Image (tube, rainbow, N blue to C red; front, side, top):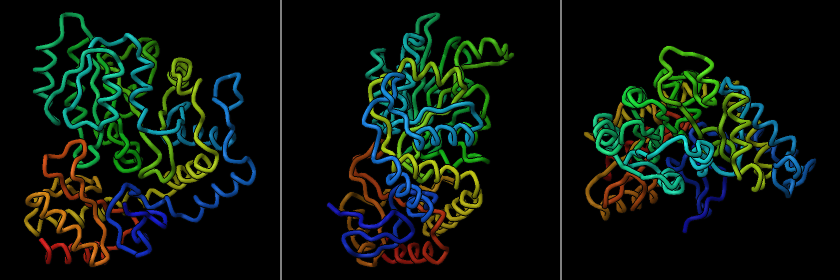
Length: 386
């Protein structure tokens, strides 16, 4: 297996050789920023590796960097509080655990990430799939499987990891509005820091922010909103565009307090290690202070996708910095990846992943730190090989 020997970025060392790197998920290019690395080193020297205990009120598990991540995340998302935990992979599980018996069945986009199917299974409720990004099929599946008065929970990605497609959240919300007590839980691992005017992700991109995102049900009731609609819940990660490490859920103080009181990931798991927390806090600060990073990322995504379309490759016209290419069969796509690697350009080939067909796909990711010259080099070499 290849080994990455430098931080992910526009240029990355793999197995001792430098490549133009168009793989992975470090979309804003922060994982290698000097300030982020320095923050991790300084915190390690001061606080050690970690607290070696859980964050329960009797465990003394909090450290200043962990608390700082939650403060900065709440500030970034315009919320009152946040919960920071080891991995975004478990975010949907934490949210469904918090819901308890407030839903009767789970409806999940068929191309959702593995972690969402695991959260659905662990809920213990019936799990029904609907066609990818198809609000009409969601409605038909709801009508066919819910008894009168039953409450659905929708699970899906905000941005789908391999294909880069965006969930039509406004359409889903309109469908769920016909079901009192409905909720929608979105894992926005690839949308946070990327989509929305302030980088708050897929709900903001869909103009559904804040509109009750991550609010306690009692708060929604007390607000007496004329069109409250389904509950909206969001989880994500700091490990991708946000330049840090670990899962994050930001919400109102009441919502986060309830979440921490009900989740065993708070009372029974170790918090993220100190170096990762300190790096994440600094990266969050940079994301908030440098909106130009998001602008540059969107500009680079447009350059990449326009270039691919000129080659005759069909690509969604969205600001997502992911381009998914199915070019012939698996053998042909593996050939393309190998040829690019020989030319010192790295892209990913996934033989199988959530959302891909039986032949897999090539996945190209562009970062804010790529130059137009770098993207042009990728496009020129790809055109010669394809």
